[in-house]
Length: 112
Figure (cartoon, rainbow, N blue to C red):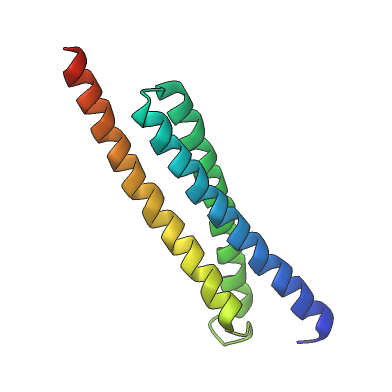
């Protein structure tokens, strides 16, 4: 790869990391809102988390497509770091969604 392609690759990988981080951050904010029983805010934040996660996944899918399974995209520490971010944010969002459901159920039980 030439220097320009590497620079674009670096920017693309950073975009993946940023979007994955935003997804995790929005999900954590949604959990905090659930603790406060602010269900409207929870919905907004989970939507934002999903949108950020989709952006990260789209970048990841594009990189996989460019690689074509042939090693065209160099695997370096930043690529591993980016993959770690996206997988961690996806897992966090899934777990947080489950925790929010528990908060909702407990809230309904307390109000019954």
